Amino acid sequence: MSPKPRANDVKERLVEAAIRLIGEGGPEALQARKLAAEVGVSTMAVYTHFGGMAALVDEVARTGFLRLSAWLAEVGETEDPVADIFSLARTYRQAVAEQPQLYAVTFGQSTPGGKRATLSDLTTEEGREAAQEGLEAFDHIVRATERAIEAGRFRPADKYQAAAQLWSALHGFVTLEASGHFGPGEQGIEHILIPLGITLAVGLGDTVEKAERSTEAAKAAWRARNRNAGQGGND
Image 1: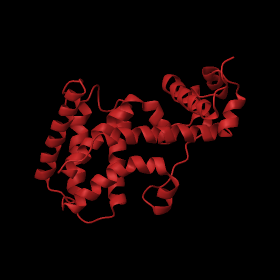
Image 2: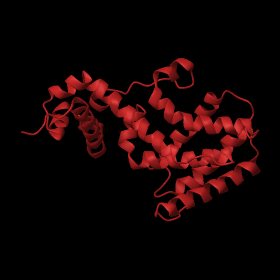
Image 3: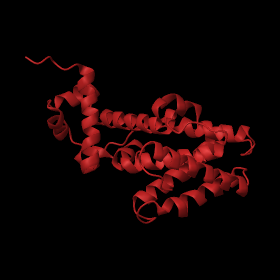
Image 4: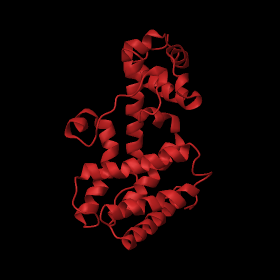
């Protein structure tokens, strides 16, 4: 007789199956019956491990934030914090582009089974205390923003609020691009995302010349990362 799977194993398999169903069929594909069949358990397992579909959706969102944080952690830090912000933006865009359905749930843009992920205001101390995984992902942008302020590239400001401005613009771009508003391929990066980033950097206190140099540094870093990963060197 096969050993009985551990509770944590079943829970993880349910989350992975939920992400797979959402990715293949959109938010409407996440149903307790389909999920149970995918994992090979009874529908009661969903309620045993999560208490209901709402908590499962929250767990999917938590997983999405953890994966996004892992992506952003790969960027690392250089001596140019503004270039690092551009690199984080490019990486964020790629992560969301590869799993758009997962991140639609993660950011509360879709509601599987009518359930929306529970989100917090990461610009406030109370909100940050309540959302560790989301904060972990957001903190990569916050840290780069803080470094830009300390380096005199951005004027003194609340680092969370300044980072939230950058995040808002970035996520708006990613959402519109995913909907096809900026054309096929990656042309939106050159035509929209990079000029948008320069505009924001200047608005936060940088100069146009320094911001443009940072974009070129970020492009070079992106090409190098892709070459090292064997993915080519497209801008």
